[in-house]
Structure formats: structure tokens, C-alpha cells
Image 1 (cartoon, rainbow, N blue to C red):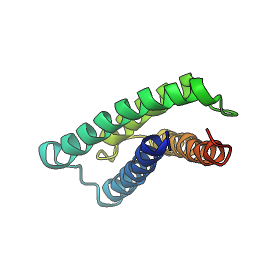
Image 2 (cartoon, helix red, strand yellow):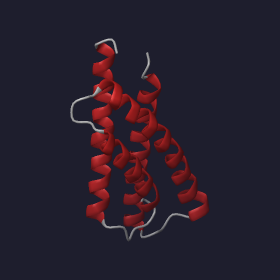
Image 3 (cartoon, rainbow, N blue to C red):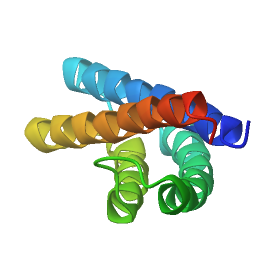
Image 4 (tube, rainbow, N blue to C red):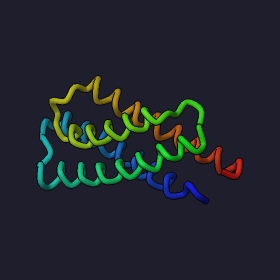
Amino acid sequence: MKYNQLEEMTRELLEYNRQAAESYHHCRKTGEQGDFYKEVKPFADKVKAMSEKWEQEAVQWVADIRPKNLYPLQIKNTAENLQMVSVRAFFSNTSLKKFKSHIQSIEYVLERTLEEIKESKSQGH
């Protein structure tokens, strides 16, 4: 199928989003910050590379398939938010409300993307 790679990347980004949430909760609970060179930078670099690739594929997919309730700007914002939370996850002084809001919105867009990919596959796209 044409969109298997997009589906794979979306699942991977969902996992990164969950990892960021776990790291954030750990940092808040312990009061410790992540080590920049051992934890923060490697994780943020990995997320940045994947989210940039995903953004390109997903924007093209949205243009081709025109899924309900998913738009190029949402894709762009989701990629940016992923990159932001991948860094902020390691700092306990990050606002809980804002962080949770970003995590939830990222998850929503990624889950919707997976649903729409599944739907488009079943329709033979």
C-alpha cells in the first residue's frame, strides 16, 4: 500500500509522544531534570528527524486523500508541537496544563491520521 510508511511513522510518533509524557511526569515527580547530552538532545533529535519526515508525507497525503477534519496546518502544528514537547518533557518547570494540552492535541491528530489511513486503505486508495 501507498501509505504504509506514513502509518508506520505515525505510530512511531505516537510512541514518542507517550515517551515524552512519561518523561515529563517522571521529572515532575522527582524534581530532576533530564541530562541534556544523554537524554534531552538524543530524544529531541530523533523526534525532530521523524516529525519532519512525517510532516512532508502527511501533508502530501492530506492533499491526495482529503480526510475529514485533518488539514495541512494541523499537520504542521503537530510536527512543531512534537518537537517542542520532546525537549520540554525533561524539565519539571514546564507548565503542566500547557504540556498536557500539547500532548493531547498531538495524540488526537496522530490517532485521527491512523483512522483515516485505515479508512483510505479500505477504500483502495
